[in-house]
Image (tube, rainbow, N blue to C red; front, top):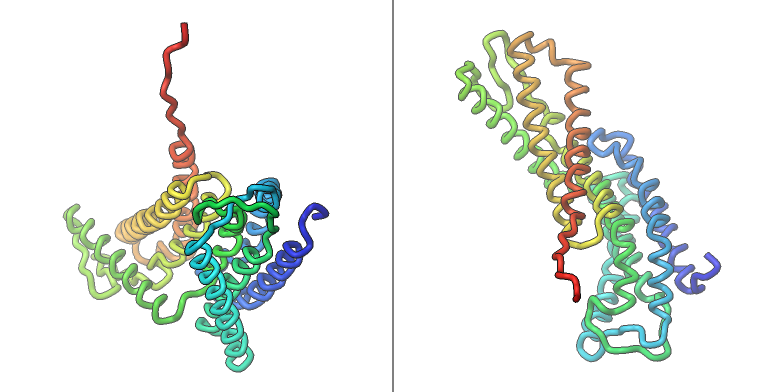
Length: 318
């Protein structure tokens, strides 16, 4: 890191420290909540993405310090500067609030979320504030500002911690109940369309040979969080444009929902044929892992389409 300016190197060191604290705090949930066990991969993936982008980061640092480097001017400069200052202040406040809450009450969803949000605000602001200056700046728009272009390379390594942080309990519970209801309703409707008698009793499906209880683990929240992380990582590494990244993340959530419905149909069909006891253990676990595997396979299949470049041929000069 010899070519990295000292102030920016210090900002990177602080970023590593903040992320280390977040890793320690979130590791509690990665250990006790299976829905977030993928979080153990987050630090390694963050390091990989920064390493993969390092040549571009170095180029962005050089662009910030180069003569004629773009900077916002006038009211744009005021808006951008005020936004960064507000983000830093809110980030520091959230981080301190979450840390004090954790010190007094131990690990908690609100405390972890506050710490994570605080880290995001502080780190992104510090990276922007410590970007190299230029002696002869040139006026540009928000997205043309060299400091903004530099910070963009750190968006995934910083924002991905929101995916691995448990949501506030009431939000997570409402989302879980919504997904659980949709899974049970669709499965019951599908079997009814096939002429197979299934009665829905809340989250329980009454079959001719017994009942199948659709538990919280089958709601799809675990699939949603894991696939959202996988989609975010693939979007950060394999596609360049913003719309491509958004499309891949949205596709990951869509794949997670559809494949989880497929798992519910498969397990219910298996129970219909071999009895409710037959879906316990290995069959249930394999179906769960298949959701993530099929989602990742679907996202990988989408990558060539998202990266497809259509070239318009021109007639050769004579």
